[in-house]
Length: 215
Image 1 (tube, one colour):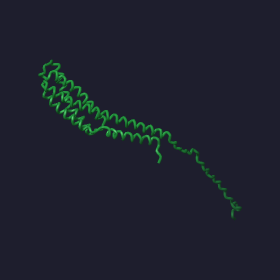
Image 2: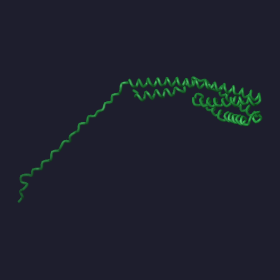
Image 3: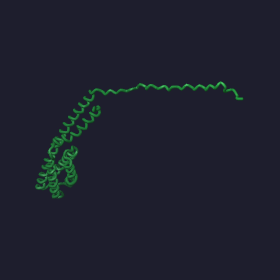
Image 4: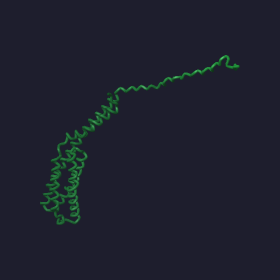
């Protein structure tokens, strides 16, 4: 059974798309340890932030207001957005989009947390600062682990995509070099059959005595 050019090309495309998730799965290890660390860090951070008394800090009202806003944002993220993103990644560990969304969220969360921890160190109690600094270190470790995971997944997907493109070009070249199918078109008109004309029947010859009236 011979395949057309389009059939060969479509088969190669389907094969390449199917292999992409498999390559990603082989490239990155199980993210459970990193996700567990994030969950533990979120619980510890929420507890440490809830014990702060920002209103008692010896600083101006604007600084307190900004610090309280950062604290609220961090707690909302760690209590809602972060758990949701972690759950999605647990359900689909090799999903590039799920990995990227979690990494981006943790990266932004780290920036807010670092600023908040620095402010706490400047105006808050020493014990509060040390607790937050420990939480920040854990968050940074998870952030780096997610970044390395993203790098591994992206490199593997890119390598597989390059292989797929090479296979596709090879399929195109093979299809182009394949001998074209010969299609025979019979455009000759069929010979028309001429109907035989029937000769008109000759009138019957009357008998010789047809015009004689019997006496």
